[in-house]
Length: 141
Image (cartoon, rainbow, N blue to C red; front, top):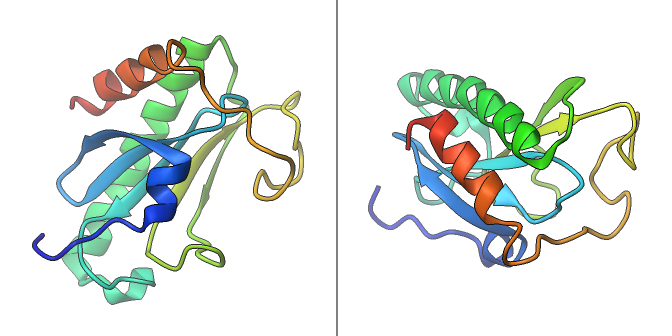
């Protein structure tokens, strides 16, 4: 996956968890939501349709695996997951990425979208270890 460069916006708003066969997995820096972001490690991608068929199938498998990891992150945070939200928006950061967010009926944005709802509640340095470890274990990474 030579020449892949992560958009700096991801570095500023998330923490690296692991590399899967296709995607870099990052924990979104908002402790109110169990939230992972998958970023395919191929240069210049903006849309899912730009992936070849094999990589589109791989992306779907990694999204499903990330859903399991989001539930593990939620458990580590003592949160429930009533619904998984999956989205590839890219309106703010154009680089192809997929959000996998665990939602619950008592979260601050329910039932609306988490994007732009309110400022993030960033993880403290000591609070990061448990959700990252839970995600890595669920991802087998």
